[in-house]
Image (cartoon, rainbow, N blue to C red; front, side, top):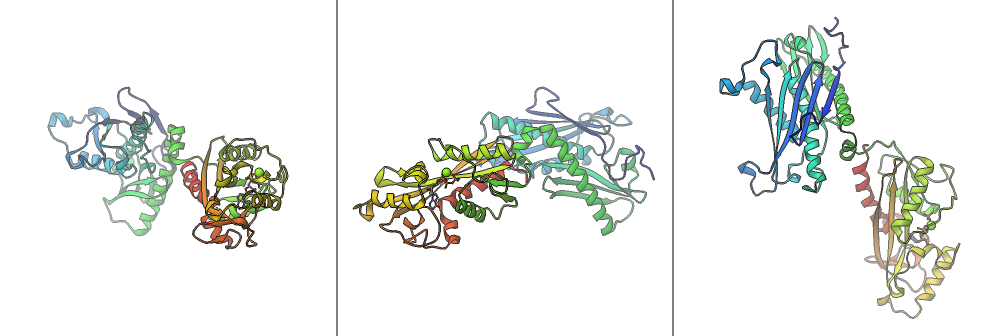
Amino acid sequence: MARIDNRKNDQIRDIKITRNYTKYAEGSVLIEMGSTKVICTASIEDKVPPFLRNTGTGWINAEYSMLPRSTHQRKVRESSRGKVDGRTQEIQRLIGRAIRSVVDLTKIGERTIWVDCDVIQADGGTRTASITGAFVAVVDAINKLYKSKAIKHMPITNFVSAISVGIVEKEHLLDLCYEEDSNAQVDMNVIMTDKGEFVEVQGTGEERPFSREDLNKLLELGEKGNKELIKAQREALGEIADEILGVEYGDEIVIATNNAHKLEEIGDILNDLDYKIYSLNDVNLGGIEIVEDGKTFEHNALIKARTIAKKTKMIAISDDSGLEVDAIGKKPGIYSARFAGENATDEENREKLIKSLKNIPMSQRSARFVSAIAVVFPDGKEFVVRGTCEGHIGFEEKGKNGFGYDSLFIVDGYNKTFAEIPSSVKNAISHRANALKLMKIEFKKRVAK
Ligand SMILES: O=c1nc[nH]c2c1ncn2[C@H]1C[C@H](O)[C@@H](COP(=O)(O)OP(=O)(O)OP(=O)(O)O)O1
Ligand SMILES: [Mg+2]
């Protein structure tokens, strides 16, 4: 059986989202799903309902209405009839719940966001189009608060969209138009997030009960439709969507280091990330010489990651690290690798450190390892974090594990050097581990995966 507008059963109607549609509201969207058209605005009011006063938490309220001539026959305005009918009540509560489910209200302060959905033309799916459009309007309104620094954090946790599905003459259909909706035996609205989770499912066997199998089929259609709607929302929101959801960069990371020990440690610590991790050798850049002429660990780390991200077009992660010894003015610091001269070996560096601290008592041999981890994305976005680990410098080398200054670094709380403890312990407490913990938090904020 062909659909009245010749769509496939699992095909949504053309969708168009126009932002900044009217001029006064903080967020304003015209959403068109086929010939259903809804204006959605989001307005910010600096007060909350009584039950939230002095809690620091905000609220989101939705209202829904249809213009008299949005339908085949003129519909009397609710304001003329003097009351809001049951259907309207139900729909505006649904919209409110859907939007609230993806906004952290504790992060918008004591404000109310008023969502107004006004249907100017109804051809089925007006409540679902309202939700899909309202979300975009709310993002714009909240983004204004964020950009003006009225709020500190982006409170939007997910995207949300909604679509109708149903059974019409035994066919399972996605995105019903009015004609189909009025002939549906089963009618369902599916509200979902970008993570593929459900926010609400409203299903009714209007003319007959439906089976579990029907339900599964309908949910599958709903999932497909919502994926496409969220893609359209993303496209409409452009860069703001990237800020909320992160960017899709693929699943390859290159570790920008020539140091095999660092490579192993970073690989171990990042093994819970669901990415393919490559070394410089893997990408034919083994032994590449990068001039580390920055004045800080952070700057040097960025120099290394930028170079490799540019050459590989992959996400590049680098580490610039070293030892700060308090008794000698935090030396060798960023010069740790070349403490005993350009091209010095680890052993030469350790010898020089032992000599530099001759006759200095243990109480004055405090030191810390520092690791700056830089991440540079293929589009040039970047960030850098720092981790440290406190300890003391021993009088002589102890232990065989690790590399660099490990055998001289007695880590606080263990009374052993990094070279005496297993790598699994070092990788849980080291400067590099601490930096990579922070890095993972920042990283997850920025990537869509
Ligand atoms: O966990 C550590 N355990 C012992 N020593 C360490 C550690 N972490 C850094 N270090 C020392 C080694 C080197 O003397 C300097 C890093 O110099 P740094 O330029 O960042 O590394 P690198 O030249 O060996 O490799 P690359 O620049 O290719 O990443 O600090
Ligand atoms: Mg280096």
